[in-house]
Image 1 (cartoon, rainbow, N blue to C red):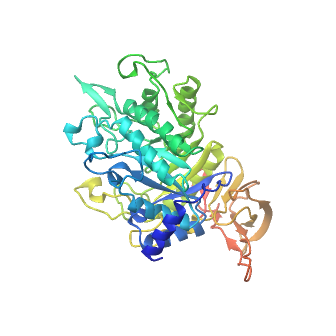
Image 2 (cartoon, rainbow, N blue to C red):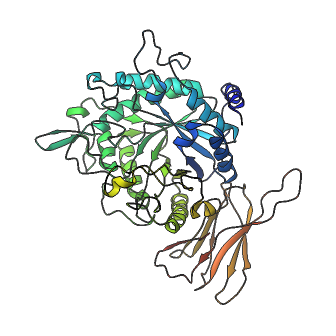
Image 3 (cartoon, one colour):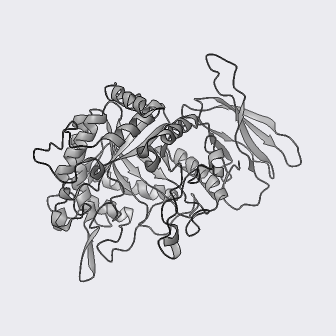
Length: 494
């Protein structure tokens, strides 16, 4: 698509009606900031590919410092998206490309902002205690501009990481107390009502936490997510209220749902992290319990009895290219499918967004892990070559041996009939086992007596077009129970 046509589309969409409702069940998302905000033919082609693969929603950062002026001009109205000092161009194009492909959009309204938005501007550090008032104005401008295109907003990316919010803690005589959770509570309290006022009926998410942290031994040490949440709610480890210091005059943060980034790094999706302060995807019950205790005590607020959860960023870096902390390409293909099953089965997770489409370039900045900086969790290498995970992405298949259950999710086609197939040990061909109807999100589950040494897959027929011949049936990958593997969850190979 030519740039001029993209701009015309954006202009039309910015005056469009509210975005359509999402399908019920587990929603599938994709995020690739570098690609979409860069725009151009590659971004247009990627969005079309995502739609064809069954992606429902795209996550894009509305980054304060990239949009607001570097220095505050006289008369600048930060709450007005029409103020000419705002630079919306890259975000307009990204949102327009995604919507033109038929994809929903959720915006992460995040810092760091310009340095003048810090409460201590003399530090020239935009991450340092950003002004909640100024952030609320920016959030209002974002929601006012994109309210006809977006109905979900995420407040701040990974506030428990010093690359996004500082200071994480305040340390005196080797004793550190958290600061970032209190700064973040103020940011949420400022942004949530501003977004709702500018875009009534929209969904606002708080959280967006990274899944791990370090012991708080210095001001920049990233905070683990569960202590961060307890500090956000001003409670101790026993969930008793704290009233002194930054908790004096406590007022809770409120939002419609909770966003989280449960990256497991190298852990398998069902491998529990022994650190009780951290929560990766295998530890979702631990995260849910923390949220529910805080909600029950009115230390964080949501309209219902408990927070719905969106997993808004998830992925595994691979080796190649990251030989320091990447997993194998075959593991990535299996683990992404297993994570989808875990998210779907939780009953609490509303969406799972994969990060990213293309690897970032590897930039060597020293020995060890610094030799592989950048992020390489894409379904494709940086040059566009597909990884094995791309082949299994549109039709994941997982067998839960502990429950005797086969699960899948047909992503590109709405609610098809799915035929589960089996190839018994010693047989040359697959045969039909049972036909089931998938839900609105394309997911299905079948209980069955697993045959030792058998292989399983499934087949479905895409909906026929209005014109032209019916498309050929499609096949998932295969789970071969004869392959030696000790894990409870077995996922298909491409």
